[in-house]
Structures are given as structure tokens and as C-alpha cells.
Image 1 (spheres, rainbow, N blue to C red):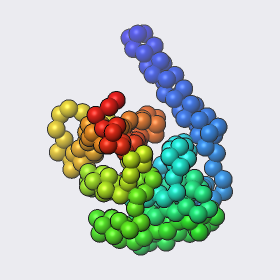
Image 2 (cartoon, helix red, strand yellow):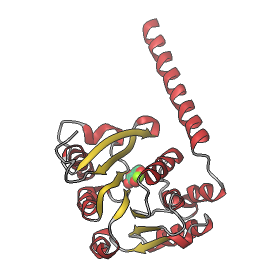
Image 3 (cartoon, rainbow, N blue to C red):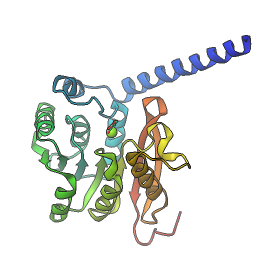
Image 4 (cartoon, helix red, strand yellow):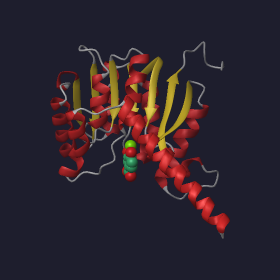
Length: 239
Ligand code: DHB
Ligand code: MG
């Protein structure tokens, strides 16, 4: 009995430490300005789901964009424009973010958020189903960074498109690749979105054209990104 209580105490302390660290890292490395705060709050004002990335994930996207010298970024899934602000702010003034959004209403909210954040000049939200818009993007490729954060069932298809629309050295990031561990479990799932994300993770991990890592940095380590670098032909077969 007393052993159970002390185990419970340890778990509580770990959870509290985890929450403290998450808050501290967000505040230290990814403080939000007014525009980001408003974009984070926009979903609740517009009857949209509040499922945007964390500030620290936004900062991570910026670190990756700067590391690959991104000038052209493609986002699949705009939601209210929160991640779009982080991405567009990592671009030089002549850079361009193209963000694809299936919902016209969400696209309007995203455009307003991007405008408010001072990056309306370099961010364009295009409305339609991604599987119809992606084939039209070839003339604007290659993209230096692709961020996938849309319907999970289509993740494997989005990875195919990301590979077509990038170049060696480009970075492909997908949100929600961990989802509490479900897509990582060996046993087969009956949930179509879990199956699709599992296929995405498998391919990110094993496709010879990619060098990838999974990063559990959201929801207290329960969710996070898969981050992939597109390898050059010479690199394929290396590390
Ligand atoms: C869901 C989608 C997301 O992109 C996310 O970050 C969290 C949850 C969802 O559809 O439930
Ligand atoms: Mg997401």
C-alpha cells in the first residue's frame, strides 16, 4: 500500500516536472507575440478545432527552415494560420509560403492571421482538397520545406507529393506522427488514420530517399513530428 502511494507520488512529481519543462521551454525559446496569441485563440472564436502546434514546435519549424535556407515553403493544412505564421516568419522578404486548406472558412481565418502577423506579403492560402491542389504545384517546385498537418488518412499520399515537390536537402515535417504511440505499436490497428500515420512513419524511417527522426515534443511527449531530410542520390545508401 505505502509502496503504491510512493509510486503515485513519483508519477505526480514526474508529471509536474514535465509540465514545468514544457512551459519553461515554450516561454524561453518560443515566446508568442500578440499576432501568434491571437492566431492560437482564433479557432475557439471561429468554431474550429484548437489543434494547432505548440509554440516550441513553431520554433522547431523555424530552426529547420533557416537550417535549409528555405525560400519556398509548402504547408498542407492551414487551420487558423498559427503554424503558417511561424513558417512565413522564417522566410526572407522575397520568400514564399503556399498553404493549402480544404475549408474556405478556415482559409479566411488563416489569411487574416497571416496578415495580422505582418507576413501577408509572403504567404498565400489556396483553397481546395490537397489531392487536387498538389498536382498543380510542379511549376512552383522545388519547395525547400514541406509541413504536413492535415487529414491523417492522406499522410502517405502527402509524403508521395512532398517527395515529388522537393529537392535533395529539402526538409519534410509531418505533425501528429506519434499520437500517444498508436501508430508505433506492432499490432494492427483498425482505425484508418492510425494505419495511415503508421505507414507514414514506416516510410519516413525506411525510404532510402529520406533520413528521418521522430521527435516526441508535444502533448507532454505523447505526440510530435516526424522530420525527414531528402537525401541526394550520392547519399542514398549511406548513413
Ligand atoms: C488532430 C489533428 C491535428 O493536426 C492535431 O495536431 C491534433 C489532432 C485531430 O484531427 O484530431
Ligand atoms: Mg497537427
